[in-house]
Each structure stands twice: as C-alpha cells, then as structure tokens.
Image (tube, rainbow, N blue to C red; front, top):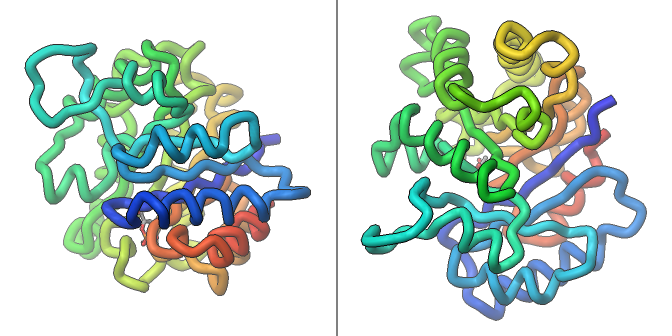
Length: 250
Ligand code: PEP
C-alpha cells in the first residue's frame, strides 16, 4: 500500500514573512493527516522555513538544484546545500525548468542521480505539452521522460523517487486533466517502471498528479488507483486550500 504524498511548489512567490506564515499555517493544520506532506519554498527562504518546521511532520523541499557538487557555477545550488539547510526533497524536471529554461532529459537525469547520492529524495516531473497531447504523443513523451530521467538509477534507490505527472497544458492554467486522463498516464508510468525495475518495485513508487489541483477537484483525481498524491502550485500558496487538498489524499 503506497502512502500518499502531497507537495506544495511555491515557485517564485512569497516574501520571507509570507513564507514563514504559510509554512506555519500548513504545519498547524496537519493534525491527524496520514499522508506525507512537503512544502517547497524559494531557495532564499528554505533555511528559515526548515528551521521553523524542524522536528515536525511537514517536510521541506527545494524546487531545483544543479548536479555538480560545488565550484564555479554562478547562481546554482547543489544537492548538498539543500540537504545542509534541512531539505528532504527536491523537485526536478518541472515543466517550467524544461520549457522556460531549456532543461533536457540528460541534465535532469544527472540531477536525479546527484540528489540521490546526496541523500535527497527527488520528485521527478514528467508531462506532455498540448501539441504533444493533440498529436497522440502523450504516452511516448512520458515514457521517454521517465526512462531517461531514471537512467542509471539503481533499484535500491527507486523507493526514494517520486514521479509527478504534470501535463504542461494543465499547469497554472486552471485546466486540469480529467481523472481518467490522469489515471491512464499514471498507469503507463507504472508500466514503464515495471519494465525497468519489475512489478513489485513499480507498485511501491508514488506517482503524484500535478496541474491545477484545487480543493474542488482534488478528491476525484486523488481517488484514482494509480494517483498517489499531488504536486500543487497555485493552490499551495494558501494554507487552507493546500490543507483541503492534503485532506483529500487517500
Ligand atoms: C506545479 O507548479 O507543479 C503545478 C502543478 O502548478 P498549478 O497547481 O498551479 O497548476
């Protein structure tokens, strides 16, 4: 039985004070929640948020990182730095990284391996664009991104990886995949994982859905058999809406 996992991706939002208030507001509402929950603030607020949440059930994650350990990589953040300030997770291959910043599967794969080596648990995002969906390429794109993102990841590290299916056309648009569309792609991702690692290993991996998840649509999507939680953007910026999604997780 997989334990659901809901993560909030704050993207480039909040001031320092807003970040602390939001983190405290989410933490305060987690009583009795059985699933894993994390918040992913901007880099500059990670340290303060992680200190505030230390010892509690609400985990902290980074939104990105670079794969090199250290050195002359101006503007970048390493896995060890995220770990050092108290992160447990890191989001990798988010569609905004892929499509605004041009990140490709090989780079994302290097980041996944560096995160695992540093003791961070990666959330590997995959998902098709609208033109890929319209061109019936969804399953092929998601298969490629999953295979290439996990290239060289050993079977014993797989339980630490979360996949996030995030159709690009549903992120920040208010347009979410239907529960059936989400289930179809999640099942396909699990099939790819089974081909790579075996059925038992695949059955243990959590696959989040992300793309305009809101309190109003969360229950239906999260009830799908292969949907094991959510990666939430806009609705994670208010404690009450994020908590409503957390509470809808099975
Ligand atoms: C995201 O940023 O991963 C995301 C799913 O955003 P939103 O919920 O705003 O669509």
